[in-house]
Length: 61
Image (tube, rainbow, N blue to C red):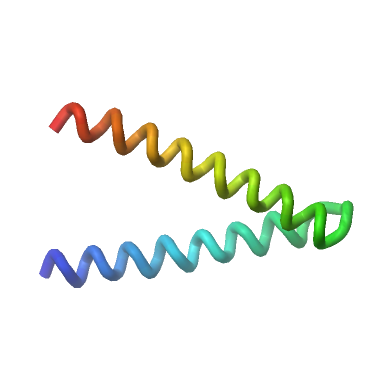
């Protein structure tokens, strides 16, 4: 049961990440190349925030 839940969250997270990257890259007014750059910066920032949260929450357990 736990493995199925983990796989589901992984797939949902992947889909959400791809959707966010596409939404950010196409919503900027400076063209697709600039939008892709901004999308990568946003994705990297979210990855750093997630890593910090993981480190903080893992210490508590």
